[in-house]
Length: 501
Image (cartoon, rainbow, N blue to C red; front, top):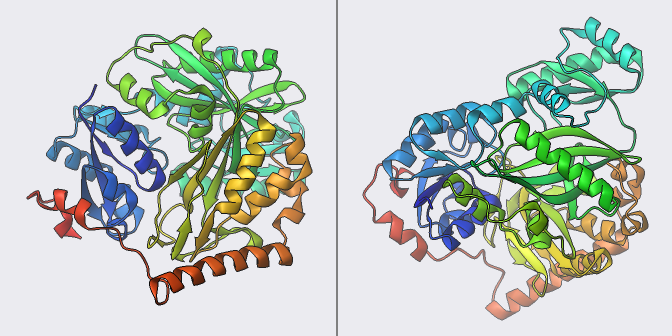
């Protein structure tokens, strides 16, 4: 097992990696920007070092700085988490070139699967179903119009160099294509430094279903079942669950086998995800995420497999100790992403200081959080504050447990999407498993103000804060974490130490 790891990330995923590494006896080294100096991931790590000001480009995206720091403090490996540098092939190559272990696939694999058109070619060659469309980017708007006519409308324009909804446009009719192509290309260039776009058939009401895979460096690959991620807004996932409520055992087996073929096609090493679109009994390859996913906890809950542990073990050169026949799915798990967004105002970001936080507890409830009372939420980073995850004996039990957990959750100081999640858990189509990626578009009432419900929630939070004020003998105070966890690493004399901040 590797002895030490630098976590090149922040927030809840950094906390999750720290906890997993600690259980494996691995020394953890956190990095932080100036405003993150008292964040949970900083306080929980064995050591922590400031890497710059708030802006990501001046801190968490400074790959060379992170590698230099890792070498200086004696880290053996770097874990990128997700986002930031996690799927940057050049960063992985630089880590490898520096003689460090990159916790993830090889840089060649990241490059191959990061290029969406190259990924489509490889999947087609490996007998993995792909959405009808092109395997090469189109040169310009004129060629896009010609190819779209051949494929048939509606079509989907997609950035070749990335995902996450960036550089993506749905085109319903020919007269809209040129403008959509130009907009998608501009957005792709800004997001990924590459404005190339390709075209595929647009599926009207597909479900988003993905398969978790694990591969070691000894030629062993298994899948851990599927996750349903169909509830999205602007191609960003909001609610995930495992297993899917729609797949038959035959479909689950076929999709899992296709995912394994996809991983083997690129010699995949570590934890990765093969994403599919599913519609009317057919499934099509969407993309591969060459990293751990935000929604990985639901897979852990139904399989009992610790994905972070296996990332570390595989990166250490260990073989998988189980085979496909050993993988069993037990019960049902649901994850709600708790983001600092106002769903009643078009998901506008909400900023401020978290003045009150009540975290749900009880059997089958898991909280993967990156904030505490006193945490400042800014516009500098992703709005994901935490993930609320539950496990139940079946889907009905999991929905009931999530509803209860969401009722217990209280966050004051910033708006969150928790009220939307409460509504989704009560909505009849969701309860029936009648989902698609257009779920929120087809249920606009979930995004409209419901005065009685919102007032009740506000009143509950207000009552809790008043009780807090009464107990403390004054207005609510922002809790500041103890300085003790900081002292251990502040004592180290090092140019990367806390004094830089």
